[in-house]
Length: 158
Image (cartoon, rainbow, N blue to C red; front, side):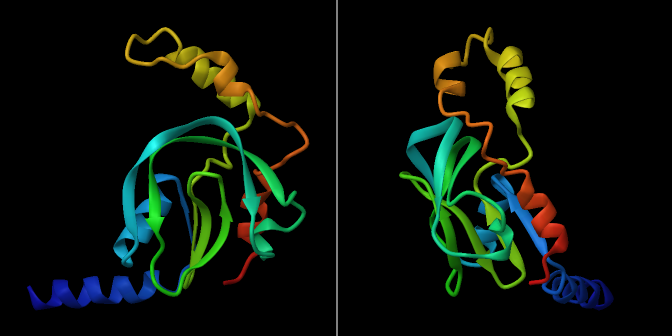
């Protein structure tokens, strides 16, 4: 039993040294583990919406300060962990932050217009979903490239 605890402690220390990108729930989970607060949002964020980059950071190099991103969440990070730096926000919640070697983004930089169209087509006839195509795609902007965040992350040393 003691050796398992030692292994877990070793893994915890190792994780703290590895740059980690948390997307959506992953960002919420990282924030929660380190003392942040996650809450259900009054208004959901679904579809393409604009966020504002608050602080210059390597993760947002070559990316517009006002960034159009895909979102699909009902919960949000109400309070970031202590000593976090908020990097971006929407009019409803935190959208990106850095904490130690963790970068969290509430939005989905992996989803482009083509993928979003596939997702929309998969859910539009589902009776529990009440999305309309206009809401889902209304703010899409081809000039914005949130997928650059992945490239920036791979080149980034925290």
